Image (cartoon, rainbow over all chains, first blue to last red; front, side, top):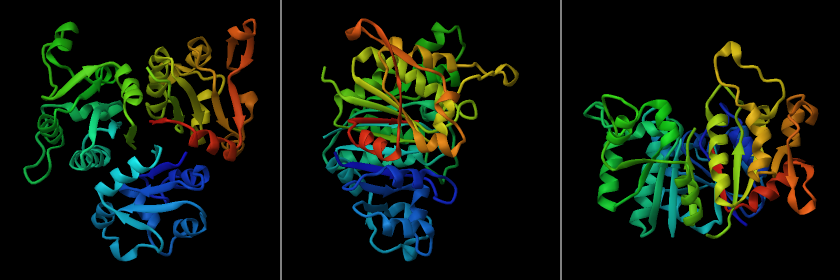
Length: 100
Length: 130
Length: 134
């Protein structure tokens, strides 16, 4: 089954992002929300991990990027979605795993 | 599609309730059904009717009450969690011999079984927390 | 009522926050719904299962004995991530010995804890219908 994973914490503050990457399987999607969007920024070890996570799609919640003034710092290969996109991702995947 | 939502954190302290609210609104706008919104842990504090946040900021409890009214949502506050944290409706307050109740309109108190049922009956359960 | 695969994911240590206790309360209530239940202990969640917890001096209820009752509630698939234990200098011996009685095998007592690698756990997680996180 293909899961939608959400990560809501900064990769510098918490291990949620690493744990998620370690347990997400190919074919799944990781959606970064709330403080998790910091993992989508350029020049970070998180961005490198995203690049190297083959077979996993990454998305980021646009409103949370905007709130934090990060739109200009988005790393490549990460799709920006809004809340409607979040709902669509949840519907398109078989189940949702929230890494809190 | 039928969605259920679990909210684990209280208003303002964490973004969980805000994100859940935006998700719920978007799901409804897209034509999906919200089977239940279940408030657990400190999430029960979203159900207070006594919050008076600053005028220029959102009133999280009131937002949930309004969304529930507009869309006939089932918002459940977990009884075990609310008993620990002191969120009472009139019946529960009376049962416990307390002289006040503080639950906002649109929220009802019920057991953890409602969360399990939400998982069984919905197509997707999405958890918001810390 | 359809049977779904429910997994309760535990990643937080006990007592510092309420999540471990209140997650366990959901498991106990949920047991009555006859679903296909499993628990996963990952990261600091493995600390929930350690032996020898004594909470008297901190004034909190010691709820760790409750884990040993899970077998009686037909909750007997308890996944513990091997890497999480190793990172914390723990082995299975540091954890409570959780068992269940298999009525289809003459009530033979069996281990509830399944020590799995991260890769194996990823497969188990991907197979679940409902993932509860606290």
